[in-house]
Length: 108
Length: 122
Image (cartoon, rainbow over all chains, first blue to last red; front, side, top):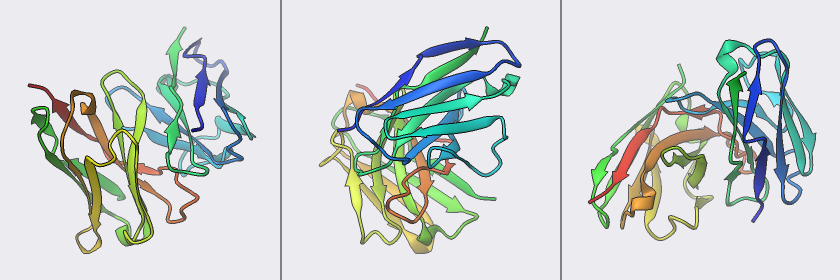
């Protein structure tokens, strides 16, 4: 089974700064990777699919990159509403569908 | 407005059963794959089960629930279900209903419900 590992577990960033989140797959998932944002008490929200395609309504400050086993979610200039937990999910050769453990982006 | 609304959660004793429902609106339900994803308290996301748009192409389960949970859908009623039997304490979680594109190889989740809470405890 393919394992998705996210790092760091917690990222402390000041508003206006750039945040770089990593997701690593134990085997290649090609570009079959999605990113989600989850705020406390809320459902996850799709940010990115296909490793780099922004979902409908997602601001341009969110960008995804990578393929194979290494992926990055970049938030170019953190806004107050961006402090949340971010999950990656791979969807190649499923089942199962698997999520990473999450990265919490907190205010520095 | 595209919307998914879960219901049916609650407190149940170990070994008990519960049936979750998810009501869909604002899109053509019968053309989308559907999923259940859960989140234990303070933990990350865990995929539970998936069903194809017509139910006939595929139904899949996570190993952790296989043989105990049954996913189904009623397209004329725009509804998704999860029958949960032989519940265990480790099934305690918020259960989300989530939509995925129709293609089987595009199984990311673009619309989520707010979730329903299941607590398994004596």
